Image (cartoon, rainbow, N blue to C red; front, side, top):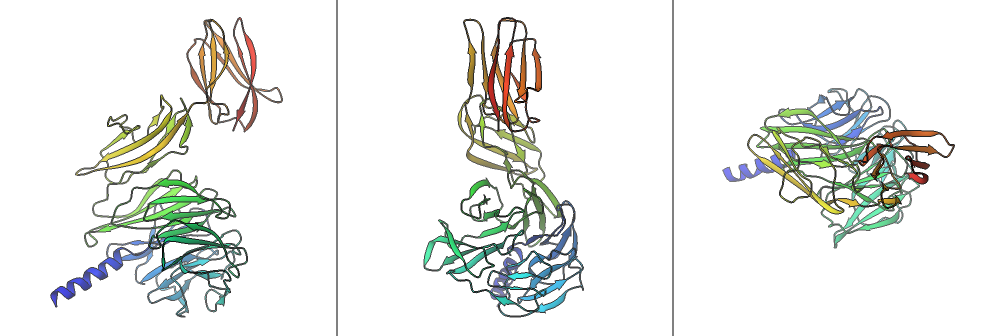
Length: 464
């Protein structure tokens, strides 16, 4: 009997610790709701500053999932066993109103573009805050539902991910343009049918994020899911649960990361906030109890860069960190101890990057294989027996490197726009190479002029 009791307690603990986390965006910028650990269990939190701070508004209900209405303060929840509630007061304890207890109410709910419109998975929606539901025909759909997402600009557009029990190595991504009356199979993904996948539509029409929890990888599409690009891979602990949601501004994206272990002795909430579609993050820590996990995470905005271009590393590691150890080519030599370093690669090719972080009693390392691709687009535009002049890259982005060997003591660099206006004017007093900050220039074609006492010529350059 003791063993049975212990097994029951462990199973209950597993259910409490490892539910799928839930996060939803509110109607205002920086406004989010999320489910996370409290000192004794799970609770609903509300934040108005992107998750930097948060208030636990209710820890009494067994909330499975949440969705914010488009009206300020409005939020839905589904509790155990699948009853739908609505609060017009930010989900504060005692403000929930029962709406529906139908067996078809799903844990996967999402609000539409009008107040009172709530979707229960993809197969039905309500126009009266969940009191009554309208069923969708879902023509063309097959399989068992894994996840769904609604476009936040036009909620006639939506996506469904499904699987077949008898097909172990494929997932099926469907798209609709008529509010799930008809669905079209867009992609067959080479994932196991047991993998946990999360979807969220972005702030621009046709944007959708896909996060694979098993592979710890984020993908992004801006063409209605026709094609996805890999954005980042993450270093995540075994004792965690996770969820994603896009924000209210262009490029804004959140990851909710809940960490709980040792029977709630250690419990932490982390909000990863990005403003560049998940390429880089700030990390907020609105709730902390006990020891933190020590996890190394990093990224860069650009992964393919030109030779001599500085690479800026964004470090979003968590934990009580005493030291950062960067190995920019994973050759076993520590190259930097800075928190968020800038590195210039001296050779072309693919480079793996390793970050190790040292805590009080542990070290955690994360390697991104073949993460940085350095390419050489140096263009030699002048050379004689004494002088040479090259630029890199062309086309350029925010920086243009001048590679010069001039015998004269000084020379001038001018950049003109096509209207003949001088936009950059530099007088060099030596022949060393240098980099020009071109971030203020608008994309387009420019004219580069190089002049010294014996030479003057113009060259076409392009800002991407």
